Length: 320
Image 1 (cartoon, helix red, strand yellow):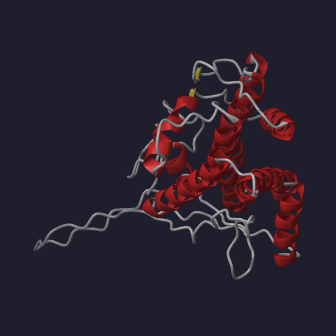
Image 2: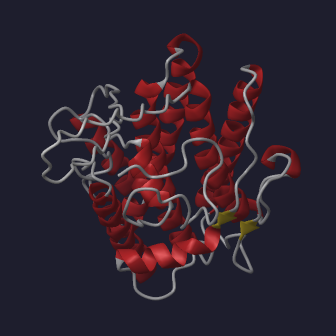
Image 3: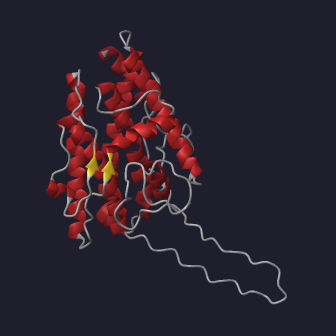
């Protein structure tokens, strides 16, 4: 197992000696109605200005996602979620299955789960502190539904009732759902930051941590499936992770902003990036909303999926 894991890592590193970060800002489209034929010219209506997205909005959007990740990992690792102090005054309820602490069989996966849980908790605390220091409103944790994994899995084509807290292989697939989205969300939102001196470095640092997490999860899933002693559950975890990946690509395309594609996890591919420049994929805030809301198509979707009553803050409704 260890040799197989090292082989996978060596192969990934030999393909990429440097990864450059790049992002793409989301462009908002203004819809202007067209009138029918008339003998009297109809003046063109003045377009409604696109609302300005502030740095506080971007930080709050990121905080919502960190709340979600922290809740998942904390419940999986410890059986309990965020404290009331970390969730904030007026926090929404987190809906969880009857049992959440994962019965890990491998101690190293348990250790990784503990580490990631602490990292995500630290991200929540950092973003709350950054917003407070900026004099902005620190939004509390919104209502979160961690039972939505079952519906997401069904949409992806995963057979049976999926519960990421049932065992360590299911936990890895659940982690895969979030980590790749986290990387693409930070990369897509980074160019929207205006006070780059104050926040861009921190955003890049969090993106780097999320990328480490994603690589951990991808490598474990692939290495487990490649092992000569692989169980049916370990092989299924690889298949299910790639079904989730395919679903995310479809949801991103449905939002009107097609992502180039997601790199499937395999015994020879760990890193998710484009094949030309080896640059990680980016998602707009709109694409991320469509994913965490469960793939509901259309403009103005403001809740659903993992966030049954929506995100807190100003970035909370889909625009495409």
